[in-house]
Structure formats: C-alpha cells, structure tokens
Amino acid sequence: LHHFDPANCILAEDTKEAEADHKSGKQKEHKYFGGLFVDAQEYPLLQNLAALRPRGVDAVAERLYAWNITAFLESRGIPHTREIDLLKIDVDGPDYFLLEVLLNTGYRPKIIHFEPDMVL
Image (cartoon, rainbow, N blue to C red; front, side, top):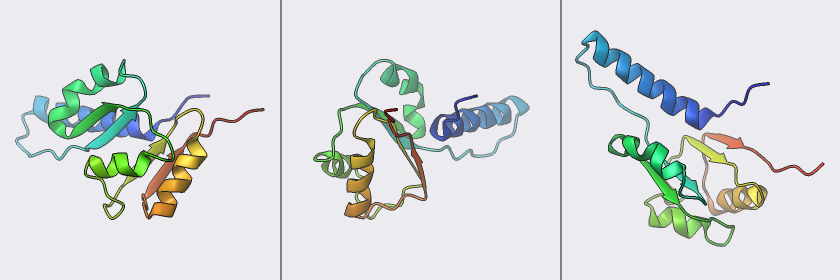
C-alpha cells in the first residue's frame, strides 16, 4: 500500500514539468502552483519548502485549533470568500473539528484531502 498525498504530488509534478521545459529549451512562461503549508513543527517543513517560496509556496510553523484557524487564515490573506482548490487536513487529533469550523465559516474548497486520526 502506497501513501498518496495530493498536495505533495502536485508540487512534485509541477517542479518536474518546469525543469523538463527548462532543459528542453522551451521558452514558455510556467505557471506554478502556490499554496500555504502549515505544520506545528518548524522542521522539516520550513527547510523542505524554502526553495519554493519564490513560486508562491509559503510554509508556516503554527499550531492550529478550531478556535484560531479562521483568524489565522484571514491573517494570511485567505478569507472565507477566497477560492481554494485543495485543502489538506492531517493534524493527528482535532482534524474533524478544524474541517467543521472551516465549512461552517463558509470555506468551500474544491477538493478536500482529509486524513482522520482513527482510534481502533
């Protein structure tokens, strides 16, 4: 069984496509995917994504909870009215509560990748 992570796959494929275009000498303007990646721990997220910052990928170390997630997103320029293509939630704990608050606040991502922390 392989782990499929759409957020990481999109960035990886986007990077490969741009590198292939560059190597082949194509002089086309490449539109990269951007995004906001948030993790409670600075390492390794900030270091791994630092090179992608010029392409519009922002990495932030922050603990998010149901009571602060909407204020955090708004402070980063992502109000509930902004179009979101992909929302990935994998926080190993209050996953459902974060998603519930976001949906109840009016966020409507096109795709939700949700990894619940199941207790068996």
